Image (cartoon, rainbow, N blue to C red; front, top):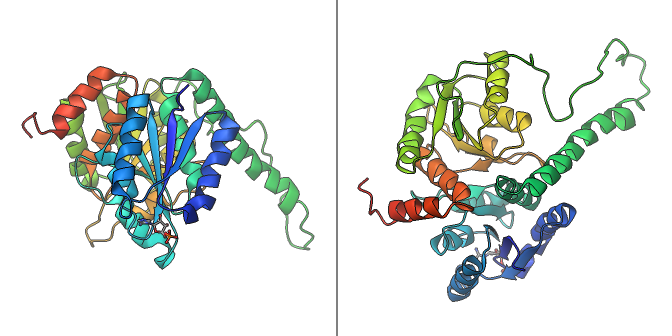
Length: 341
Ligand code: AIR
């Protein structure tokens, strides 16, 4: 049987990062393929592996590379399937690789995870597959609960053991907390125009709306239904939480935000569904790419290029196309510019 995930490394020297991905896939019991091929040293090998993998039924590709890490982008050139990119820290703390992976032109998104985050790449790939495979979805949920449990355990194992005269935690009464979730009013519902939408776009503030609208234009062309909500997780915490929780039928969340990255970080803590992040520039010209992509293990955010709402929509289409041939046809047309943009 063909595996559903293919991991490609730019070099044998990237193997330690692939090990992190394989550890996760072994835990999730998802078969995978692993190959080494360099976008620059062996471009033909990349093309062959990716084309054959796609024809054989690979559903998600993971490209892992350092330096001028053009491997994930090269993979995307040869497959309609979603490509997850893992930048590797070889020089410049991996920033060179991160920029090479995440800053892709329309319509070729790479779902970028943090530097050296092979583990998050595997979780994200499993989340994509979990949208049409219930067994995988439940396994990912269990796995993510483990990351939450570790936090609870650290309170027992680390904090409780501290022996200092002024530390005092006894006044806290924390019980019955949903692991990996947030307590909300069960019947709370937040205003949404399209409650049954397949995609929810959450925008942190009004100034980021143009980026959301760019995503909307492409989602319209791909005939994917969506809801757009402007809500800030810090200024309106309850509204934000209730909104995420009330979008029960959503398959994919897109978080769009400048200033910190509380939007994407907030969504990913509230749902097991895949979260795509679009970092925006603010009025001072600062961008929030690093704070969007650099998520800790267990809670990946599939980050696309700065202000690139259109690529967030294309990535959404690619994920949904895994088990929907009609969507693949629409995407093909979009990519070939057969549809007038
Ligand atoms: N690389 C290989 N071909 C193109 C690139 N960008 C990357 C590898 C590795 C780094 O260059 O992915 O992270 C160094 O590779 P090596 O083989 O010299 O150790």
